[in-house]
Image (cartoon, rainbow, N blue to C red; front, side):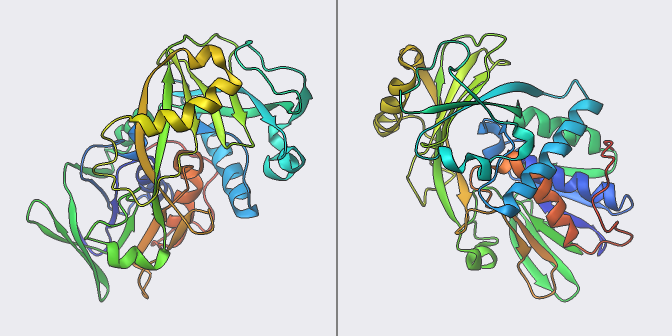
Length: 359
């Protein structure tokens, strides 16, 4: 590693897309990606991988639009990638009046009477809308595919933990679990929910981000070919047909904060089902009878519910990219573009390139 090297700490979907963005803008820049486990592990391994064109703030709406176009371009050029288009239905009652401000125009929400497939019962007072522009991805497989394409130009050091990050003068010092000490010109931290890791906890403390438990329930029923995602806007929940796995997933809001990513994924417990089942039974008694398991992890959330992309040191040599509030996959391309835009790379283009052909 040299003073020209960009080190990316975290090999999830955000970290992989940051590496891809660096190579796209500055092909001669050396890039090294570190991950304590493997590419696509951590939060990416447990992600539902759902993307739909919406955003509660103007910045998030712009990031959603950019990421939407990025993924559409990627899928069109590489149809073998695990990115799967599907229909979308939105169910809303007291949030119905705000749908036009939340969903992008490209969602093309159109009022309808029922949810396709017959698995969801709609409360009499609720409205139903059909939408476009939705897809889901097998996120760990996608991260690994991106890494595979980048390997001729990017070094991936899996199973290597960064134990200290110190901005010193014109370089950044990295100490590794292997006993090595390396230097880089710039470092991008994309640690997912590992905000309190001792290597960078003092650096990220001013962000005031927190880690929240994230839960999804698996429902053992084969999705039909026409089934799409059903979004319950009032409750911030959704039913997602995971066709590549052969079952449904139910994601809902679980308000348990300040959890430890190294211990939180110990499995489902009674509190998980107590929070999930009433809502699932309300909307789909049929699927509620097919609960077999699920996934438990956590994610980083910012104070203003917008992704955090910012320099952590006065010289701008250490950049944080994350705290995406459960939308890490959905907004990953835009997060990567913002992060790399802060790096001031030699020969970097001023705008993200339209052509995103893989390395």
